[in-house]
Length: 412
Ligand SMILES: Cc1cc2nc3c(=O)[nH]c(=O)nc-3n(C[C@H](O)[C@H](O)[C@H](O)COP(=O)(O)OP(=O)(O)OC[C@H]3O[C@@H](n4cnc5c(N)ncnc54)[C@H](O)[C@@H]3O)c2cc1C
Image (cartoon, rainbow, N blue to C red; front, side, top):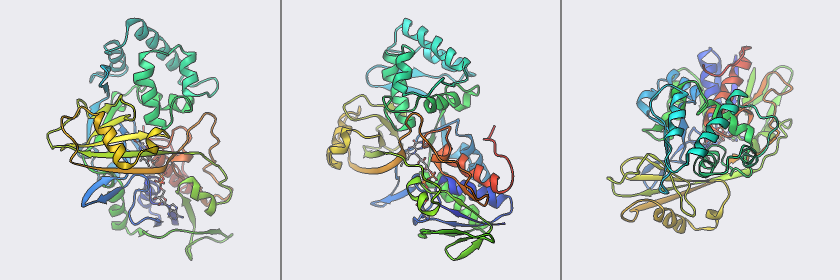
């Protein structure tokens, strides 16, 4: 079967890998010069950086599965750490390396900066949420959900709201509670301890999946066309035509704002949220108290220790930071870090349409189109999750299975 995969982000690459492994003949079309889409490596002043700091969890099982398939060993490429949420205001919640759910229970019990009454109420609430399978009677904002549950104290401020912003790229006041609950179900609520781990990349994003996947595909005869933007897709009764070539089927794995042009049935319209990553280079010996550090100043949200003194500060969603120049933003974030000296170097990368706004009741498109030979993929089509790498990869694998006439189930 000859298949066109349009889009070389993590969704398109995952689809191409699975189809190639099943014996299909793949041509992948990617508008950019390099693979990876919104999660790729870039070179700035001779340094390899990520276009945006990404946070990955042990629950990202399909990513780990694809990585193993293409020979990118997750054990080598990630450092696994039990999740901790630590901030400069004295809050600390640390999961021990114990079986789930004991690890979460212990973390809650021993959380610093939270009173006993609140811990007990939260434990009861989490039990109830779990008992209901993390299903809400109706979607609402995360803020409304937490209000309804009486979650109005320190854990809301130091844990739930920051986690919501990190996972959904939206503040609790606007984010979908059901999608947030899905994320909690598969991470803190999972029966597998490993799912709650943080996966800290030891290499840049390109080396995690996009580049090994591209090499793996090319070595197996797939055709990779970079710097090739597809302007039209024509589905006739005999074939699907892309860039003058004929295919038996096509996967459209591009961001929603572009997909409608290729497939007019794809009419879903989203609002988008930005993300800025502010890289600050300090002296090599500088380290954060924990590799993922919650900032508590006026602008800072999360800071990630990339090693050798390089810190990636993440600013999710619209906010006051957008009005600052790059230099102002770097200076403000630097002042909010526990660093002894000034940064030696900085680089601000702003992604204006980093993610779709994952609001309550958001209408997302059917990944199956009216034509069984054309399937949609991409983070926005994986309705269980907000815009995430894992959602993208799962959507790509699902699209591949559909064309192979097989059912897709996320990796166990
Ligand atoms: C700064 C930032 C931080 C993020 N942080 C996290 C995080 O911490 N954790 C997490 O899980 N997720 C995070 N995300 C979200 C994650 O990156 C995305 O959900 C994921 O990369 C989407 O992959 P995709 O393949 O669905 O889409 P994309 O990455 O958008 O890939 C689509 C590809 O299609 C190409 N394309 C578009 N139009 C055409 C065309 N006409 N012809 C050919 N090619 C075309 C594009 O160039 C692109 O490469 C973040 C995103 C950003 C931007």
